[in-house]
Image (tube, rainbow, N blue to C red; front, side):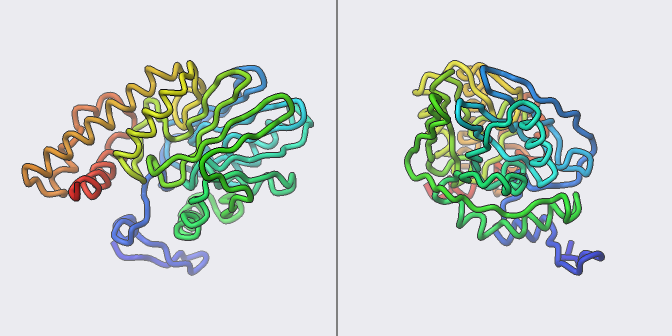
Length: 319
């Protein structure tokens, strides 16, 4: 399907096929979905509030609010763990914060560059927080941000889509954030789910925030490095956290079994992709067979697994 001009704005909108050829990530890219979400904020630990995102794609009804987002309250201020999937979603989150505390919103964490996690950041501009992101997030947003916003605006409208917000504090390695007697340790990871993944540990409760390094029940989306993701998963396991807030799935999970399930899928994807390459199976056929045994374990499997196979094949064929 060729690119088309948006009748309302004249903006050129690329087809999904063209985006793939051009090297743009289609993982977590907004697409018109069917269902509408029902949102509620849950206190999953002392001062930790999370909204569970539904296993949907972006729709006008859900405002691309499909990721787990929330905030942590400390003695001196608030940290936003994820900003939401659009300006409208971020505005909803900010209103939920203000229902519970009038403490200043001092930090907004941009865990990676996919729109369902970072396009709500503009809703917090008036708070003048530190926007915290991976040191590789800025170039990723430079490359893809306008395209992501265009696709989101096609679904939600310009007024609700949001804008690209760049990190004002870049993390390379690690950093600590003090909310006032509550220390949060932020880690910048190597290429895994994306090339710009951050995780965070709340030292007060021991709760881990791996963001999209941990998917639960929703099919993971690979946009970085399959081998790297397996490596970073092992590293996160070594932290010894008992509980975690995944990027998608329940608001809180037992970390070890949840990560084991994700690792199982990634390992099957790796092993069967290697087998397909060794056997001379072309990529066009591999996308229909690799990891198909995992279909019953993951929501939206048909939407994401084929793309994951494509990414894995490109990475592993040069081993």
